[in-house]
Figure 1 (tube, rainbow, N blue to C red):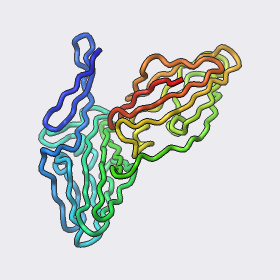
Figure 2: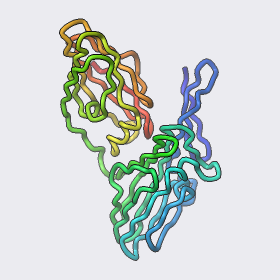
Figure 3: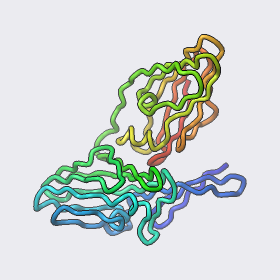
Figure 4: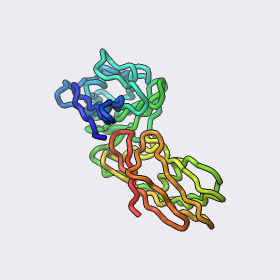
Length: 264
């Protein structure tokens, strides 16, 4: 298996080649300096997908505070003249909004869009916005200040004693510590999805990571085997035996994709 990465008119396509067949790639469009920035001035504005496709929106707030609205999920998913198309869940587009004026700029959600992060941009401020296709009709938009260091996640312990296979909640997994009792038989548990992890960590940059500790508190030989949720790839098989404690490092590899490696 080899990784396939292509650059297509300012977009990056990444997928995997398996026995000669290319799996439909994930698409992430990143800020492209070859594009001419879109410029917006005047009253409150409704951004278009064509403006987002430029990669950078320069917003002049010299005349007063402004509240601008992102395009609808339908417009973003459909794309503009095939410049980009979010063809499948977890595809995303990354663009920048720069406030070039002296007043505050607030970004509001378009139809069927969920906002996560800081969408209030002060004078001369700057935000990177990632819009991730969640379903065929909805998107999640996250925002981060690239000049701020990544936020840290406090450790909150979760006790999970439910019998049978479980999908970990994003709050438990990102919380950093899970005490897991399979309660009678080996289990195969599943991590949250990549989109859930991205939404829960809106300031985590690509290449950033966080750690989750899972302790198997079983009173018998009941192994916990871990599977990745959609958008989460396990690096090697991960199994946690009775009384074993494993530290899992979850690494962000693109806007809504993560790798998980067992450290110990």
